[in-house]
Length: 278
Image (tube, rainbow, N blue to C red):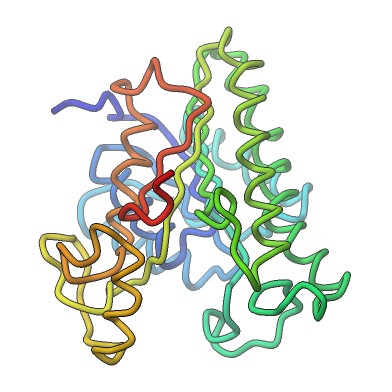
């Protein structure tokens, strides 16, 4: 199936690892020129190497999405390198656990009861999730409007749909991205710019158990009892005997970037194995 992506150019923020990495790789498989953005140049370059080794075209750019001048420079560099910019994937996010960033002690409002959080953690969570999306989207929209075409996809979370304890500020920030995307979709539809969201559930690089057809490696990871408890929360989890893996999220993201989704805007696709069925 031709998705109409060959030769287009896209930025994937926070794509040096995890879901972002898989989105970048999958877009490249479809012929997209991919800008791999990360706050760590080494991680970005490693993904660029993977893409080029597979015959794709990519450029790694270090930029912090909370830094508007850096975001503007990234967009200008992208257009200069590839001659255009049709796709933006707002994937950069806040780690839910310190181990997600190698144990680094970063202020965050995740993993704590709300009463124990503080404004420093709120600021980091809101800056990355809220202002990161605002900065990157506003930076690309003028170019997309000028060319009367664009695809913007933001990664949210089921926490932003159903709410999660110990993720109260995170849930608030992700819910805000949903409202932002719906409103922006109404503003930009006249310019043939689609604005959508994809909501993962629990997702890891391994899925913890057998991949069952997913394009990611597996690792036993959790104990059987812990895994069984988690799988009960995900209707599809027991069927596949695993949690989500990055390819489960990347595939609907790439669909929303494609010409197959030209009439789809202002929606949230829940790529969460049924966790947030309402």
